[in-house]
Length: 350
Image (cartoon, rainbow, N blue to C red; front, side, top):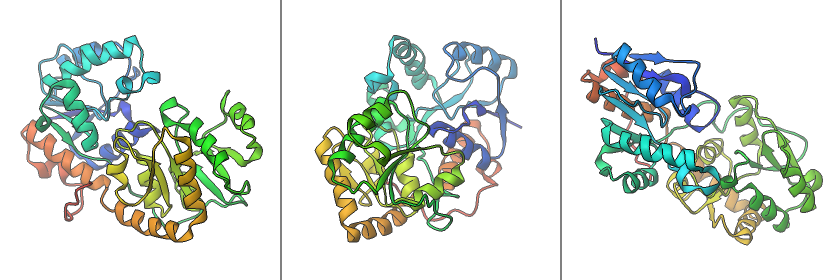
């Protein structure tokens, strides 16, 4: 029987990690590849190619952007976005070289390239020169525990919520300025996911926000879901996303969302969010103000968000992926897909 070698090293508490974990749990017929070396190691493509010469799978499949060098067999990899090229703060000479000499040739050699949004599909095609038909959008999903029913985090005060890293493209500095400018009552605090770092508290103090900004570790996805459900609104004015899982998770939890009008984010949220210019602090502040002051707007967005979240499921992402793997590996789709429930009507994110 043909075997598909799956790079399980990507599984972790991050965007690609969630995608990798959700697929691994839903797709049968995978042989898991794991190693002490991380898949983003600069030498991984060469070492991976050597490993594949020994194991000789019918197909190597990575849920991340790593690909084998020097191996002539079939492979599929997943390029979620071009973050390391398009965001100057996340780029350096080594990363640019990796994209030029490893990822771009891999786009041409791969049986196909998977991605997670139409925005990323178009961007990858334009950058790599690979026709869009060979770049396949399998989407991202949302599922348990992200739902409107369940425990709500209750810290003893109302709060707005931001979930994301401190990387510059996540735009937390402008969000903090906008929160200070919005006129939101200071008892309506802003919870920022993760622990405090070396520079954000200084920025908070400089803005005169003091105890109004709270740092909160999200130690499990169950706790994260409860924090989404307890929030008055979710704020995510990112400058760049290949998809944007946090706004989708917030919508699935019944939380009104404000996010950016750029990149993939409008594609994900549709008409179920307040969209703002993420480079304009006053526009972000106005978005916060609208959510805080207009209860009918929050109610509308809550209902629209719950409906919008139904468009995206991990089952559909897994099913699309299973069909691609089965076609490339020359297998019957049901052999890969037998863990999945009966197919529901296809809903196209748009």
